[in-house]
Image (cartoon, rainbow, N blue to C red):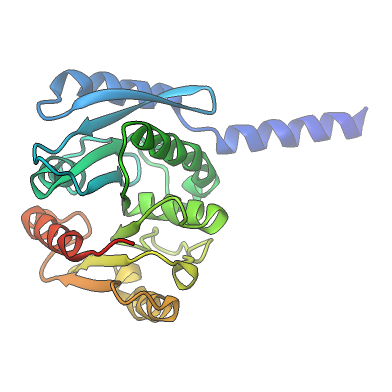
Length: 258
């Protein structure tokens, strides 16, 4: 009996420690859906949970593909920095965008708190890919910022990059003070082109890891991969979102797909 109770307690603790805050996610959706000016809300499903995404189609006659955009920790798919600028500007360069709501926790949750949630993002990425394929999209680029990059890399480490055509990591490697990364990025094993972009005034963790990330990308050997620094930009690209969009759009414009 004691063994059963202990097992039940540990299972309950693990569940509570890894479960996303769905109520907060709902509040975020309620706050932003009616405020969407460009694009339209699309509700996707993963793990029997309906989650918000925002689809913004290109107006160009010939679309190059679609970008799935993953926001940073505790944010939402129309976040004013990084996410909204990319999702609303890339269509002008021939890219549809699909910005996803990722699992969130309470506002003061740290990197270590989010690690158990990384796996919950995978089914959402898969649902987004399936949605885009159903609409006829051929080329898909995964774009991820901050904690979204941790979630994207967790997904790549387990499923590989066969279902995407390129990956863009923005501010990769950010954690909280005194908290080391729990999972290494699988950059050295990726086959698709990778853009590692970060600000010159980034968090120390992101800056310190830059040589390691570049070495891994070179080991992977894709000649289209690049590492770009946006001078003066911080982790959130405050007042530098235009520079971020320009660099991302230019890199995407140079890509040659198989």
